[in-house]
Length: 119
Image 1 (cartoon, rainbow, N blue to C red):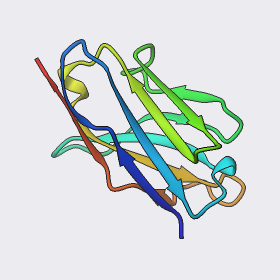
Image 2: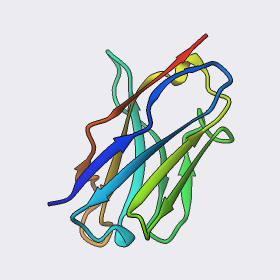
Image 3: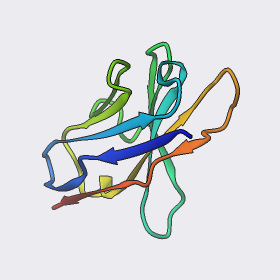
Image 4: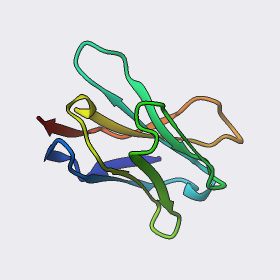
């Protein structure tokens, strides 16, 4: 089955940078749209960014210009580079994948990685 494993979270000061990664196994990664979502306690999970199987990307307005999503199909990995981090970026970050040829929903999810931005 398809498995997603995030890594790279941690504690960083406001204004700093961090890169989180998501390694995918068990599926045809180069056919997947890959996305990042985030969630804080008491709030719904929110969309952060997506990169399509063909390489196009879209960002939420909160992170546009500060975060960059990328993928390495040779490594079956998607990345989220975060710069100019703010305390309000603190959340558990989840990667998610879908095969747009088969599903509209994100069927595959990682376990999440904590990102904490201190002020």
